[in-house]
Amino acid sequence: MNRVGVWRFVALALALLAGPRLAAATPPNIVLVLADDLGFSDLAPYGSEIDTPTLGALAREGIRFTNYHTAASCAPTRGMLLTGVDSHRNGVPNIPETISPQQQEHANYRGTLGHNVVTVASLLQDAGYHTYMAGKWHLGQTPDLLPFRRGFERTVTMADSGADNWEQKAYIPIYPRANWYADGERTTLPGDFYSSRFLVDKMIEFIDANAADGRPFFAYLPFQAVHIPVQAPAAFRDKYQGVYDAGWTELRKQRLARARELGIVPPDAGMVTMSTTGDWASYSPEMQRYHARRMEVYAGMVDAMDHHLGRLVEHLKRIGRYQDTVFIFTSDNGSEASGGDDVRSLGMRLALRLNDYSNDYDTLGEQGSFNSIGPSFASAAAGPLAFYKFYAGEGGMRVPLIMAGAPLLLERQQTDAFAYVTDITPTILALADVSAPPGRYGGRPVEPMVGRSLLPLLRAESDRVYGPDEPIGYELAGNAALFLGDYKLVRNRPPVGDDQWHLYNIVTDPGETRDLAGQMPQRFERMQALYEQYAVDNGVLPVSPDYDQASQGVYNALKERFTPQILLLVLTFLVLLPFWLFYRYRRA
Image (cartoon, rainbow, N blue to C red):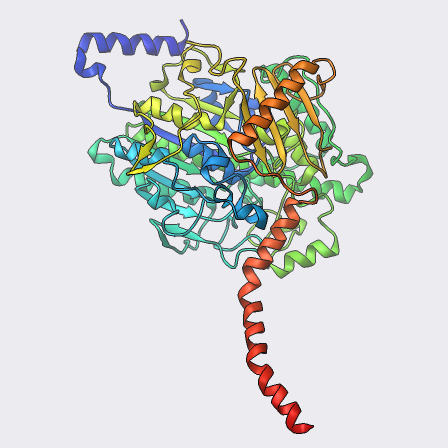
């Protein structure tokens, strides 16, 4: 009998000896941890060279999912994670910053979490849980949409798509300021702020404030790590000096080998080279040194996140709450490729200066620096998978998922069963013995949850929670997929994709190296029909052929930021025009 089995036996024996009172145990505490833009192989338990002892321990004590999928962008994932409802039905089919004006006319394309869904926090709060959140929200920031009004009792919230990790500063010019809120009101960050440390400090504060009443808590901890700007304290980033000197292609090979050894991917799993991956040997020694430093800072930020999460784990042990706590850790999407590999150009440096940033080698990762890892190292972070954030390839959608804690009563420690982001809320509700709302909540109709509880997988009651003929559809900005059993139908738009449908067995070929469309024409056609039905049933709107997510984001930002100024100029012109015409008339 393994260690988990021993614990289950002991718990059962104690319940039988103590009688009904002990058998009806208090619901567990639940800590839901969400990393931001963390790649599939960025953790040691998934093949990484990055030091992540806290998550390594949780993986050893818990269960690793090797076939878990999210949306390929942050807000759609967060909406589904917290509601169990498809992104096209909960109001968040894309991040609001990049939704086209034509799509924004539709109620399900606002990019903010609709009131037609209920959050897991609301349901747990109704069941007697304390509910806390510390971290990134990105689901709306009007008073009625902030987490303080969506079921969370105490909150400290960064409402935007991202922000600086060292100070209260917007990371890109589309935001006039970094929008932080505490319990629904605007707040100011402390002078010694570093995001991962601060968020854990606040979560510990929230938990301790109500520790005496004995009620269970739900703690949602969505880190900023490792979203751009990639920043980390020197003590963490300097640990990795020299680790990435061989470049991104060598790193991908190393991670593939470790993932095979760990059983994260099959022993014969293949790996494609992305068209956006540069030739490391073509860079000068100076640029190789610079790119390696970018990845060193990234590794340091992952390391720092793990360290501060470890502080929360140790705190729960000290106050006697660890043994009755379940930990769920995952990422909102795959690795982020923004920023490019040509980051030392004069144009890039001037653009950063305009936002009071620099990307100098000597200060990379410190306050005032702006860092990203670019598409080449992003492919390594997602490796051995193809694609990355925003795209529907496995590298954009397949991410780590670790669950741990004595209340889980685990009977297996790893599974390659397909799981999806909408499964997290039903799993949490099953752990808390709380029912999903039967069609109505708070006097209004709400969307039904479509996810499945993963507890049967954890307890070896089943080998999968979705049958081989149960389709799961997905779409984001024209990139689309349909999962059916072990197979995946996928289409990725340019400039990285070819805008064609492909078919893969993602259990035997997670790297999406062997297109089976020609070998399995009937399955291919059937899955295309199933995807079309999914799109109709969920109100998926097409994007225009010339739609580009980055360009749309710039357009929307300019419109949002400068429309008031433009209107003021037009109004001023109209007010002054009669006086000018009168002046011209008198002169004539």
